[in-house]
Length: 606
Image 1: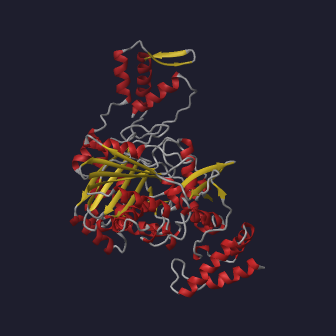
Image 2: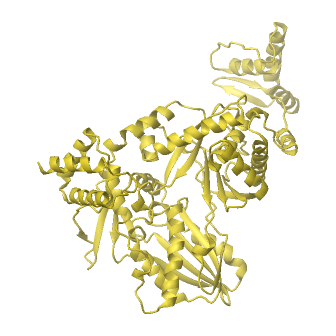
Image 3: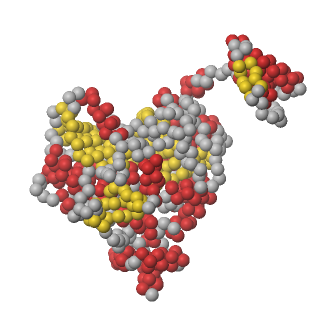
């Protein structure tokens, strides 16, 4: 009866409460009270509440996230208490991938800055201590019992702090790269590493590396902002506690993961149905101008290529977005889709885009792995005007964000995608647009703070375009898989993308198929693959080594001279019967030398 009464109250209260932020303080207070009552129920009563809530159309997204009642266990017999939480759905995939290859740095998130000026190392260390104490995600390690994984957050869990001094500043980039690529042990922890490297008088480099399973891009920016605020507080009063320097954190990522698991079944059914219908139609893999054949198992080595869009073109693109009643994101994504279409001529292009996954206001100030991946299924063809492409893409992006609550891993499970170790599932390219970090938000007293190169240089996808909007121009950063792309190829792709942006800015009535690539790049593409027909290659080989073995099948064999003569004779007969280029020829023959000769003859006839 308690559960039924509570559900009735919940339905009545939430009927008048907006989902994201309740304007009425009274309604917000009621929702919080209901959430706390729910959290205090036994697991069985919570289950019954959820079932009835879904049946009666109560939206759990309108309830604020609060810590659920749970048992605590002593961590390893120490005096501190560790709290155990289920993995968030997105974490489950990274846990699986880490177990497959625990030494891989593919999911290391790194950031390095150069600090010039007088650095107070003690204050910086205190700032990191306060930051780790503030965010449970940074004190997390992972355990698995009977095949079920959990994340363990300990109050006294630390982080790795290391100080170095370099005699040769030229070694800095290699040192930062080594720090960024050092693998994490998700079981033993810690999952945060800080390296402070002295490279001269009043010159330091600071490297911060965290595993993706407890962080994301939003978290990295938040970490830097809060670190600088805590550093300023530590400088201002050496003896003061830093806990009051920032607003208190009421929940941790573990609480969010537990809440997601509570509602993961019924609440997402409609969203999951959308994705299975949208992505259930199989599309051929995206055709890209690869420099090398794809290996059966893809590597993780990557590279980066950067170019800038000048402020004048950037302003024209923003004006184009306003005129088309869409966003700069859609314009840039549309140009990317058009470029990909020009490579493969495929009418459907699937592009992954990250979603912050922080629809709830209480998650905005948390460090954790919230980011989700949305697959934008772009309809594009050469006859389509660019304006039509942008209009359709605008609607598709809005649809995707309306159904963004479903974790990408859940979609893969629902579609039963057969995993291919040579390529990522559903899409091979990604796109992201982000705002440049405000310099004021990372200012540290007495120091000049500048970005420092030295990342992991890894790639999880064939090609990722990350655009940074600094309010003036646009910075384009292409991250690519080095096992299939050369740097020069990606530089050409970047230049072609800029050319398409410029043409779209001139007018959206232009057809996608009429978008021109730079002439020198078209010529390079044509010259890049010196062509020798298969028939000509066989004839040349037969002249060089006529008696060498060309093929063997059981007891039968052919030399190059025999194979060349047989296939040439078949080709001549086909041509005499009117067979030529673009003509279809049926072939019915058992496996053996005759099959190879016939295939070569058909090819040579066209």
